[in-house]
Image 1 (cartoon, rainbow, N blue to C red):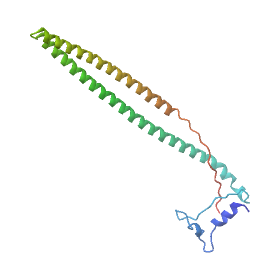
Image 2: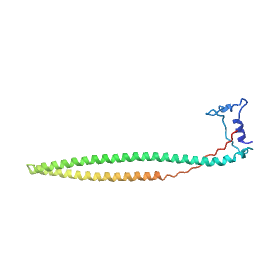
Image 3: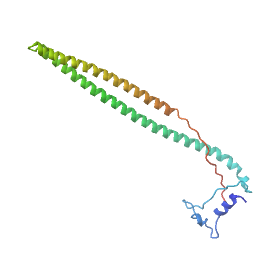
Length: 187
């Protein structure tokens, strides 16, 4: 006989009516161990054809549900990660905007103060020095405004990258391959 008969003999009951003691005698649930039939040469293997026809359909359905659940878990994990990255990006943009606007307001206040003081300057030299400072601060204000635009452009690029990553995650390719097939026989 083939390997299936030998395996069935190993899984059979001993003289005391207990399962084979070399494998612990019983499974984790206290039931006798049953090893798979590895050969299709068993004389009674044709008796279970009706049950075998139902099993693949049921197993295929269970496998499909398991695959769908695994893909859903993967998508949920990806979605949580996407939300976290998006929130971090939004927080970074908000922090940069607030900091830049504060610097811009401080520069504007300083320029207004220098303009007021230059109008009240007692000498032309002091007024010229203050006007030079005003010009320097006006240049810094323009650079800061340009920096704000650059930050907005950088934010837009990062969002595009984030959306592209999201799209690539949504276009997953999955493939299922049977790794092995079990056939068994209860003795």
